[in-house]
Image 1: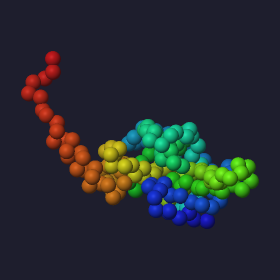
Image 2: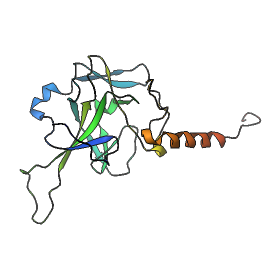
Image 3: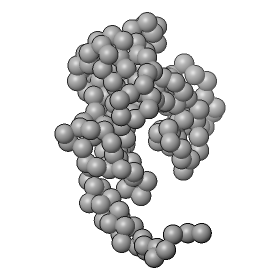
Length: 190
């Protein structure tokens, strides 16, 4: 089943269905962490992945809403600090993967009387297109413009900033304002 975008998930699509089966674990996480040409470590495919297929489940430490680090992603009303290998997924303005937050309504779990059943959430990486062996896996992090940093992805479609595509003009304006506030020194510091 293909998940649908619920409209307010940012760069993480949300799905209500059955996620990829954990019992077929051998078919997932066929990746390795290795050095990249542009930005430190990255995640690379060790087997081909077809468009729309799951690459693997992102496991990590849940953090409270508002938590920030170089690696965390917004997830299930808070943040997730991913463990390796997906901790090293790099950004691209032309990504070959995306995050999908699967919501699972597990009827087998006990429920307190009078309380609403909260779905279990899992974060997965899925292929946006066919991926070849040895290809680096990338996602569009689509950060809020206030947290954006310059992008070095090298894609022909590079926005120049790691931000939501619709926020690119806000990023450029912020950077121009910061540049105009720099006062040159007339003499070197002592």
